[in-house]
Image 1: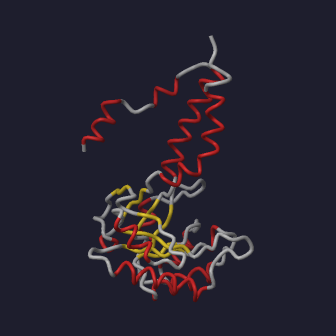
Image 2: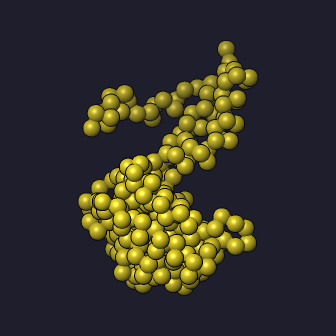
Image 3: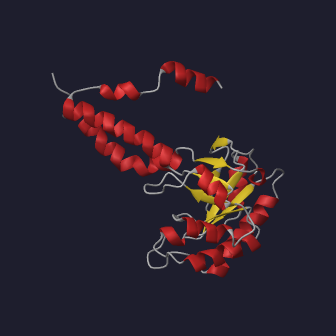
Length: 237
């Protein structure tokens, strides 16, 4: 007896590979809040999209209100353009986009946490001084939280935190980053997010299980699976 090579796992794996970016996009984005100013109790672990919602304004500030109408209580606006050769918006224009999003969020009948992101370090522009200037401009524009994804060293994180007066978010769950919650707290980080890390961990376990069945015909992956009882208790709460 062998696993199907035509309609089984070998056929499914390419589908997973093709749609993996979509899975990572729609799976809720978790984050940990370290202190109250961002609207969540200290140490509280929260799952979106009700808790948080990634938001690209693109000169349409009403998207903040649309996100809020869908149940979001926060969002982020990036300064990346998505274009090759012109990776981030000019700083003044980027700050204007943040200001437009802030104005829209302040019109809501409840607190809406707006995070402004400086994307330099993840679009091939590792210019820390420019990143700090951008975050300072976004702070001036009214952002509630500041975020520069791609910072990896203590010195970089400390430089950013010490240069602004708003809570700073740092992303963890990235290969090679060894800092702990305590380390980040000591550096003054006020919020920690893990982006798609938990989704990628889950999908990685799925792919390893599929490959084990396909390549070895064994099923030991089930030894690490969560029990029905554990999952039922989670959903009950």
